[in-house]
Image: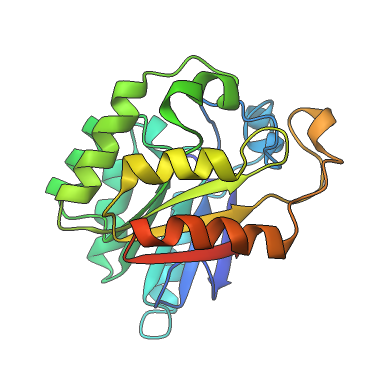
Length: 231
């Protein structure tokens, strides 16, 4: 399982748990506002964190940390995911998976094997605009399958959407909310300035918090919980 970074302590990545975070490279999307371009192109030349180092850290801090968040990139692209999570679960940890939802069969397998306890799925855009927003060819049916799988399953979950001026706005959120209506938890994420995959988005000023709160007011009736998060 390729891992490029181990964050030994996180207070924010896994709701309700003190956790570590392992970051996995590779992604099948090319979202122009992504600030993790180093995980997408050329990552093969960078040194990896050995699986054994991650597991050794988790072993040492058992009883203090309770969770591991596996983010990326897109973890479900890698064939070693299930075997790695078996090892993490054997240490008694709860596991949160961050995913774009394009591999529903793999997510289903992880759920069936009970190696994940929480899934955060990014819903990038209204379904009819997916390929445009992620700048990649997308099997939208797979995204829909993952949404249904999480909504009907027993694993805790959240859906989240990043709002980006000129790309994803309040109207898009309302369309997304109609697809996700009745879901347990929805998170509106504010994009951040920085080095982005498409340099033109590096200087796009984020929506102000007052505007994002107005977005939340419009979509919160669709969900049991709706929150704002800065990434």
